[in-house]
Image (cartoon, rainbow, N blue to C red):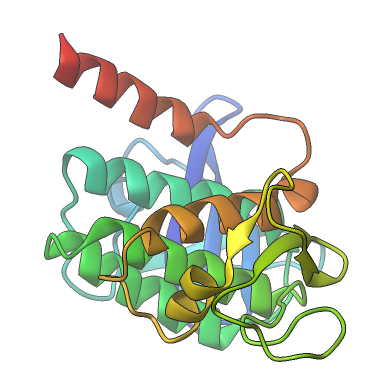
Length: 229
């Protein structure tokens, strides 16, 4: 039975095949695509909704059918690098064959936002938040580790294992309660909320990504450097 899928990553495999990392509602799938240089191989690229059929009982499947399932999402510049960032997060963090149908739908919606050139930072932060929740790493943005409601005039420190802990003003690596509450209600126009969201999501993802740098982040660095030349 065919299922919807997106290619997250592709690399050459043996002489004429490709090893694909795919996102489906049933989770991340690793599969070998034979004769990848012709026919179905032309479709095996990121940001294209596919109809996928695989065969095999092991974690590494074989692709037996790969067809277009809709129009591709055309991403350019920072939006393209953002799409690659989403793909890298999923490859690094999503277990093989661990079903996440809600995450699949949210990924497709996020690609649509990027293709339309919508506000980039909110789209990325919301996806990161959704990913953390789906993997069981979510935390409250309205209550601290003691179970108390966040106070707008307080400061908080983030602990990946526990969440947000109230802290003394002047302590390092703090978030303002006002910005955290603005983030909780998705008020992206609140002063400083975008910086808070980016820093908080980076801290939340770091323990699960490990020490290996994300390749896609280097694309943003290169983009900023080229814009400043």
